[in-house]
Length: 412
Ligand code: ASP
Ligand code: MG
Image (tube, rainbow, N blue to C red; front, side, top):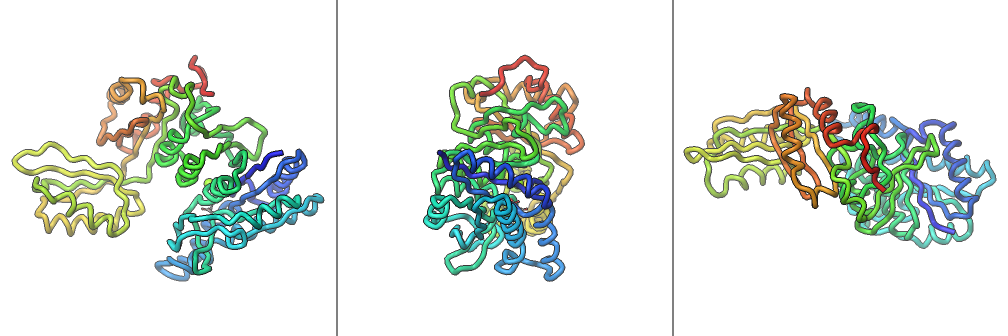
């Protein structure tokens, strides 16, 4: 007998029929003799609807009451799921974050899980109860309800799996796993059997939207095996797990893209010590995350400084940087929201050379100008004009032999 955590996303619980369908799968798992913890999202679209309501009530809906409202979607789905399971003759109980309890810090809207009390859940599981837990929410030390950031029920599931030392954490979604790239762009995108935590971390933060990045950090830290699969089929899914020898043989595992960033350039910045901190400290003080940074070669003691921020922070960042530019006597500030970041990810890059030059070569042949570059051990990202996103993804996918028709060894 093993302990399995199953998380179902919004589309999988989008209406009663689907909830009942999921309940059947849960019941089947329990009837096979496993202890089952179910983590649910709100019905698809529900959290967006709740967020919109808070915006109607208040121009800047943040803090305690915002979380109070947007956490309610999950209360509905766990209740309905437990009711469906009960109707099938199963023992099931729904639990909100504070009833577990999932303890977080007090960063409303993007709280981090600090600890999970497992006693109550363990006792319920031992007595044969299927525990249905609300994703996305927790409770802080003061007893207030918090939420974990959009997509946070993935993190609830993986954190629960870690705390309960579960044998497996299954993430059920509306796609059959992690693909070599977005199948909407490349019809021949291939489902991966396995990816390493590090690859998945890069892919999640670079734009693959299947898992919340934070959940992968948890999975890596506690070595929770995570199986991403579809609730609409019995297909095998993708296992996110520790890197093994086979994985390094495959140089490139996937191509991701992200259209949610914007680029800001400060022109003719005086080139002297202390300037970078003058530019970037006000941004960090405003809680704006800077992603890529490029500073070009200095001519006559001046340099151009370019960086990217998330589109949602773009306006705020431009305002701050225009003020900074005036103070440091830079010539100009230029913003550009029509960019995309295209990234190539693969554990095998650690041990294979030439991936960067091949990437640049492939893009050059298509006449795609590279505006910025950044790399890590296992990824290369380039910023290009947004209109080239799909083309860049397609040609790279093909150049690195990721398509279905290619004769490459499948991972795993
Ligand atoms: N319902 C929340 C959201 O839409 C959490 C989740 O789905 O993971 O962001
Ligand atoms: Mg999700």
